[in-house]
Amino acid sequence: MWLALAFFSAALLGLYDVSKKQALRGNAVIPVLFLNTLFSSLIFLPFIVLSATGHVAEGALLHVPVCGWEVHKFVLLKSFIVLGSWLFGYFGMKHLPITIVGPINATRPVMVLLGALLLFGERLNAYQWVGVLLAMASFLLLSRSGKKEGISFRHNRWIYFVVLASLLGAVSALYDKFLMKRFDSMLVQSWFTVYQFFIMGVVLMVLWYPKRKQSTPFHWSWAIPLISVFLSVADFAYFTSLAQEGSLISVVSMVRRGSVVVSFLCGALLFHEKNLRSKAVDLFLVLLGMLFLYLGT
Image 1 (cartoon, rainbow, N blue to C red):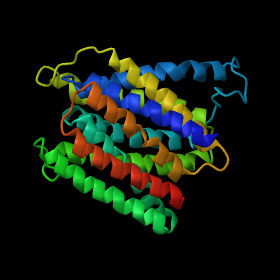
Image 2 (tube, rainbow, N blue to C red):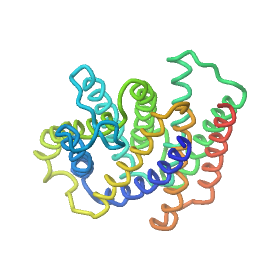
Image 3 (cartoon, one colour):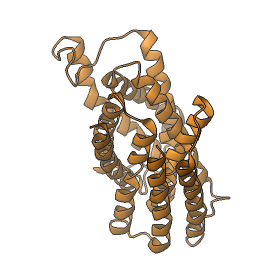
Image 4 (cartoon, rainbow, N blue to C red):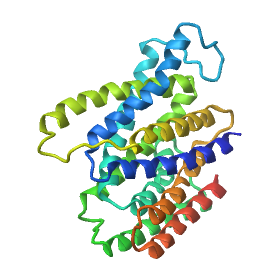
């Protein structure tokens, strides 16, 4: 069951990336991200209130337990980690083709695996090493594809933004497994979403609002609320998957990166991006690397 939830989450994550790309086209990044956190909070806030007032029974799927600071401090830390990943990822997504951003993000399971190697003393077997090497090869080939579009992986800061977003995402994935072993999944998802809204409110007022007339103007897009809907449902399936007995963070993280297939196809069909044939080879190597990671796990 946890594996099926991971695949469902991956499909929705692909649609989330497509909505994000559409919302960011010619748009200001910080207010788009702020509205994303606002709509996501509005999705989960009713469950927090209804649970606290006893209208959602304890033990129900959507029940949010009432906890003190000893729990919320861990959730708040996750909010900062995820928001850091999103800020870097949103800026990268705005300035780069989705057919480049997607495959870079798809290397995240390799980062999770290496993180488990360094933090938890895990050892990689032959299949997993092959998966890591294939992911590295795909990244090098993707840099060649980027050069055809005038994108230098070495000198383009947006590439570094996407890589940093992936690194922080890998940290978040490792931290998620720690959280899911100790706390309720609805508590983590609902409260870290609410905390993000308040954090982004401060970022909006301090960094964007005073300089809004000198930066890219903001305009409304119906893709903005879709970002929140697709992400909230995808994360709900993800947290529910991790909370189940026997779930493996390395496998769940790998399956979720399968979202790159959805985003890649939409990049070709909706955004008419270039050099799809060479990028498809890069994507195939990423997926092949993910397969070896799965076999090794």
